[in-house]
Length: 378
Image 1 (tube, helix red, strand yellow):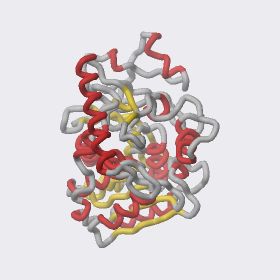
Image 2: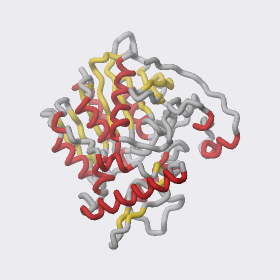
Image 3: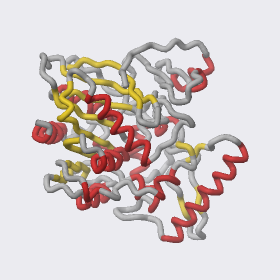
């Protein structure tokens, strides 16, 4: 398992449509014969946040145990000297890329003295895996363990001091991995979602949205889509939040976020739109910014609960959420489920869900994350 840095030459103008939106050249999946190889490794700084002068940064790759090659950004403090440092693997939000929130968290924590790795999960961003735009409770949990593999092989890292940080939907993945990977010494989440619960029971106003009948309707809808995909030989795109009307009919939008915001949008829709679809957070490789997941993606999450073994998490755990976050109930219930005696729930006053994606509102408690990891990765 070896990291390497490389530039990939590009020559097909038709492949550059999405990239032209941000001025960044990326490589299309169609240009590689290996479905598990990286889709691209862009060397130009193409992130939604400014580059720090306090850290060294390099593009890296590593494989998970399914053979999928993941692409990440490694951040290392410039003033590290010869010391071996504690390290943190960072990923999320769900449908984002490492050039967005996870990279900001990683670079900021590297400024605080940690080696950090922000990575694109399998099937998304620059990482390998086909078909594109798929998520999996199993494979994406494994992605965190693969990041631990990689970090533990770096000369700058003390492999006995590695932690995880999951944002939004990758908070649930981080907790899932912390319950399984005994090498992880501390785990933190920020405005976490339990994606198994979100897709299996519906995101509601502080509680699950689906009735038992609704859940059945969603399963029937998704499995009918499987027939369509099998007949066409392609994976249709679709939103992962499935709607069930009063007649029990399930349906989904063709995109995660609309191309234009409706005149009177739901406040949560506006939160996401103002980040992913606006210059503040837009990135051409982010499925949330540009399109949709594979339409049948929710099936595995509906059947495989991520937090089944949360009670077996015994390492220190920090759960951070916003006072006004629509996702707050996920964090509070996860906090109650985690078995660790060294756990803490932090509710950021006045913060909504997306306030903790970037620091536009100045609400991300970076000092709290720094304190937590410095205390527990000694």
